[in-house]
Image (tube, rainbow, N blue to C red; front, side, top):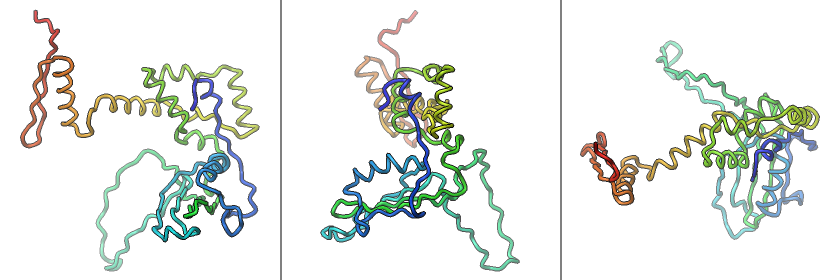
Length: 272
C-alpha cells in the first residue's frame, strides 16, 4: 500500500530480459523444483515474471480430476501477455465464389489496439498436494515490454490505484492530485537516470486524467445508488428522505415500466 505522494512518485516498474537457457522455462515435479504452494508461486511471479512484461490472468480452469491422487492436476491458471490476440475465424462462402456476400456494417473505432498477437504466456498447474508446476514461454514478439510508451500505457497497479481512490474519496480531483505528483528539476533528473540506466519506470506514468475521472465516476455511482436496479435504488432513496429526513415524498411507478414520478420537499422549507 502506497501511503503518500512521494511513495507514488518513486515507485517503479522494473523491466529486465530473462536469461533462461531456453525459450520455454519449466519448473515441475520431474525436474524437482516445483513450487511448494501457490503462495511461493505468486511471490516468484510478482518478483520475477512481472519484470519481464505485463501478464494478465486469462482464465482459471478446475480439472475435476480425482482429488485423492496427490500428483493429479487440480486447477490450471493461464496467464497471457497483455498484447496477446486470438485470430478471428473468417467465414467461408460454401456456395462458391460467384455468390455475393452481404456487406457487413463495421463500427468505427478510433482507439488503436495494442494487441499484437504476442505468444508469451505462462501456465501454472496446481496439484492436489498443493505444489505448483509452471511452463513459462517468455519470449515476446511484435512489441517491446521495456518500451517507454508501452509501459506508460499499462493499467494502474493495485497500490497506485488504491492511493488514487483514497485521494478521490477525500474530495480531490485531477488538478489537485496532479499538483501532488508534480516533479521538481532534481526529481526529474533522478527519474530519467532510473529509466535510462536501470530500466526502471515510475508507476505514476499510468496516472492520468482518465484514470482519475474513472475513479471519480465510480465514487459517484457508488454513493448515489442504493441498489443495482434503478427503480429499487430510487425507492430506497425516497424511503430514506421520508423516514430519516422527515421529507414529504411522492414516488410513483408507471404500471408498464415507463417513467418514474418523483417529488419531495424538506420539512425546513420556507414558503414565502
